[in-house]
Length: 126
Image (cartoon, rainbow, N blue to C red; front, side):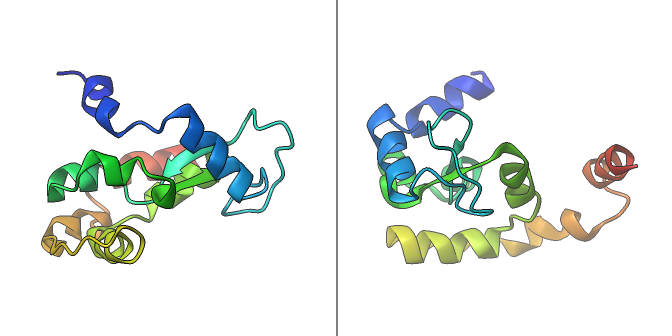
């Protein structure tokens, strides 16, 4: 199964995307940058799809309006660079009413400067 096929059950409907843009007044939820026509903002899953799959959270909750926020692409990248299981477990409880206990040990690679992802990120920033 491809990456795209695994994401399909979690995709926002066009109606949810529109409502999210309206709720945030067509502005990036993280930077406040305006998008009057709703053409360049992306709709971010506040609780990430990978975490939902890992924790067994229902797709209907992950693609709900409560889990949607419009973001510009650079802010979207920064949001996911900072993500961790503890953060998502709190957001799942707070936004979606789902109580999960992730294995936070799985996030240790984020602090490891020798991990291949972190080496790649350092090279891109130079």
